[in-house]
Image: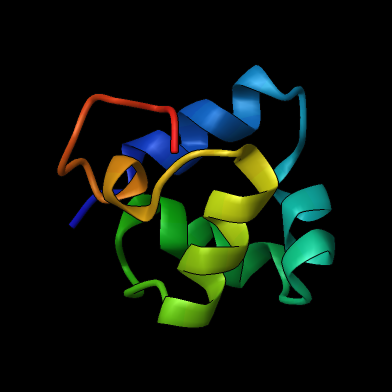
Length: 69
């Protein structure tokens, strides 16, 4: 599964993969693998991403187009 939305959210926030890795306490490489869908994003990380960006987990998972919580 490609997590296109976390890349779009990151780029909209003018953050690098390295900066997101630091925020999520993982390496840039691991975060890059999340964006490319090479690693499934653990539930804890999904929740932290949703909280950080102020969107729902369903939005990140492409289950809805509604960004608001």
